[in-house]
Image 1 (cartoon, rainbow, N blue to C red):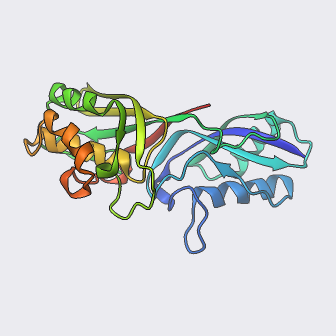
Image 2 (image 1 turned 90 degrees about the horizontal axis):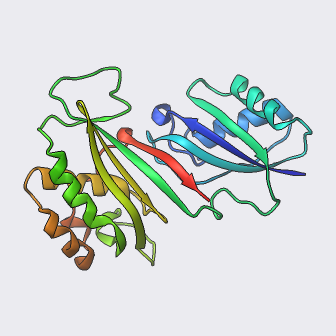
Length: 244
């Protein structure tokens, strides 16, 4: 038996997230179906994250066991022939038998794309969130810096989050503009459910004057989801990098 570490990427628009579900088509199911076609083996893959419906990944790490002697280059070529066009294998390697894509992960970087324009762009409607009001990216950067460090992110996760420990360490949080596209990048040792989307929604509240950068430390203290910004839509969110 060989333990494989593979790196995939996908456009999540057509999928109900990564993790297999009984009543919906997911990225995990598409990958496992392609592996069965390629190898004849029923293989269960472990993913580095549980991305939501409509969320994308530029770098998504998988681990799985395989009996077939097909070389790693053949796995990449074969999978890219078998997979739907919106999922791809980027690389593949044999690894230690105790490697696990999720449990060995030390951190991740997410990126959120905001199309800051009054005009619609039909070619990116499923890959970025259109926000028509003018954005002051320098103000948002001042607010973004408040998220760096170790904090209790209870105010920045979904209201029914059942995690007992909601403390996470954010390594960096930046806001950058390129023409009419705003890029919010956040790297951390871990993320709570909807955490990135709520942080982005909170930054947009700052842009609209509903909050100030100085209000953010207070949001860590109150641990109240209703005090933070809205949860922005999923189509602008990308799993950008995974750290081991």
